[in-house]
Length: 439
Image (tube, rainbow, N blue to C red; front, side):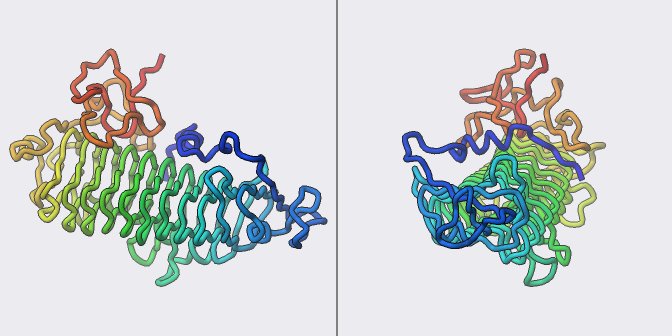
């Protein structure tokens, strides 16, 4: 397994969505302490001070109200934490380990169960070996889940496989900077009406049901109008990022590689998706796949190479089936297969082994069929080298084309490369990483 680390990506994700620090001018928050190793700990109504902390996180959660921060001392907590109270925009309820502490929540139905509330933040926990979803959020809004490690949720058996993080009917929330791995269904899932959420800066890998191919890195089902950006999804049993019956979502600046199905899969009538500036490599089937009457999909500025080689199902780097062609478009992508003679692209369910043949049908007119010259794709390093054809060749004319890359590096003009892109910035790079010359 190859794992690409982003350095400051997690911190940047949290800052970008306002989940670091408090609101200016807000009243000083009250703090509850939890320390199961403290001999004086108690779950009574008089507990919660540093001298007499709660023994369990759940006891603190039961008494938390707007403006309360629950700080948890190091240790393993065998419990299910239910959050049933709301904060406010200026006084959220916050759960976090004390500085430098590793806090593990394990063995319960969920690590955190958040239901029917607003303005709650969960930051910095390790949640493992839960019976159900590691973190479950339902009928909620303005919830932030950041910098958590969520793994080994559910069981690899029919009816017992569970997502690592699940949002059901959740709005205006953020999943940022989490590591989600080895769960028995998809790592992160937005389902059943979840909308206007941001899934950003997460790493999701090695998620698998085992008894059937079905666990994606990031899965959206009947979840429309969300943004999935700046994530790393790899080595999952099914697709890296999967949109099913989910309309008007933006999928941009992600890296998706070595997954058991597609890099990005748009299916089940997931119309009006925007798939922009992603780096897709080495997936078992089509790198970017659009099917099942998923019409009006825009695919542009991606690098999708070495996908579907010898595929048992749907080969190619980008595939759009006949039912999804109306209103859909391909342009400014890089596609490539070592050695040639393989299927590069599928459009209108017709396979093309050359880019020129597809261009004769009016698609991918600014596409490039060339090695993207990544630093080392076999080791999971998808940064561009100085000779990459991706440099200064994308279009910024498209709505939702990101003005910065996966690491929030702003799109910049490389003075050594002629600008062949289009739009107000004719120097955007294709794929998830913007090239910066080393000095």
